[in-house]
Amino acid sequence: MAIKTESELGDEHDLLPSQAGPSGPPGEPAGPVDEGWWLSQTVAELRRVVWPTREELVRMTTVVVFTVVAIAAFITAVDFFFTNAQCVVYGAGACK
Image 1: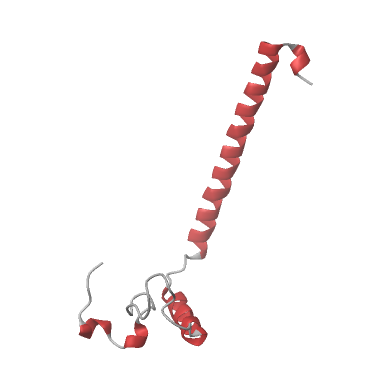
Image 2: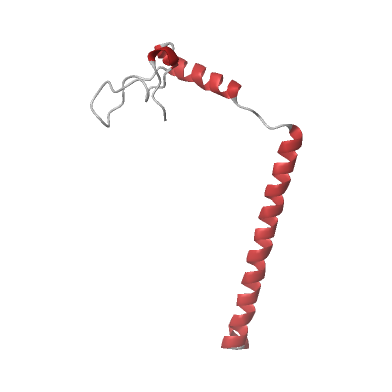
């Protein structure tokens, strides 16, 4: 992370509490949390997010669903194989 010059930092309120510098002993909170400041910074950050288009969202969701189904099918096949292998090794009494 590059160190910013004073002109690049802008207003001190733009800094996150972790960037503003320590104001107490290490490991202790820097001070009281200003919920209003935190909420406004959160909303501002969410406005900067590049949200996916509907087409991208549908495509990524489809990939995730098919991947989960494929992994579940693989685990089911491996389980079936080992269950049947157990029956062969230990005899029919091991299979219920």
